[in-house]
Length: 256
Image 1: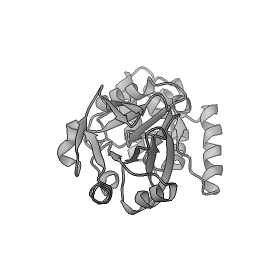
Image 2: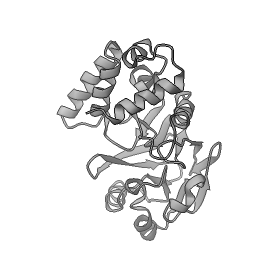
Image 3: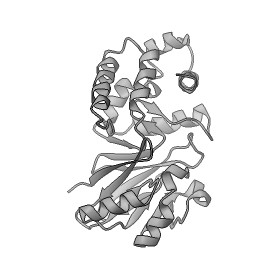
Image 4: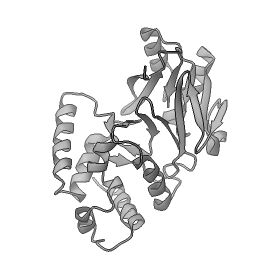
């Protein structure tokens, strides 16, 4: 049996995820911005919180750590490269490590760029990727502590995962991401269709996360620096991959 995953919307646009392994009863809170909401939802589902999985140190991802740990005695798992900034961390993990949540096993990727110590957890058997703020549906994180080359390398690791992989990112940014994507790749038919579906979902106050990696490869400009249309928009037809990626990220930073 694969992971059971529950979405918990909090703050203005954050998602906290509960990942539950039915075989063992282990339950992880992924990137808890706050404590009350995941504790309450786990109780409603009859799940006992045993772990916190942190992708990076930002307050809207670790703000609930200590309160949840005090209430449940859970184990906090986070990035070795940024352990000093993860409140209450018990287990440090990094690139290539494998971590078991009950009977479910995650492979860990170092994916710096948004922060210097960002990681992602990939549960291959459950086709689930918890990627924090590195990869969004039709977007990617801002480069607060990294370079375009670092972020492209990080995204390239994730882009090699199977098409069916579900992208459990931490924010509902998809509608604005889609508007930007259309501005740089307006002739992408798959993108136009997906943007229309996102508008329909958001008009009905429905979530757009998770998406799948196959969809991202077809519509996310940050995974498509080789796209001729994107390159034409940026006037970088003959530029290198990292230059195109960096220009795309810079364009998004100033997009309104």
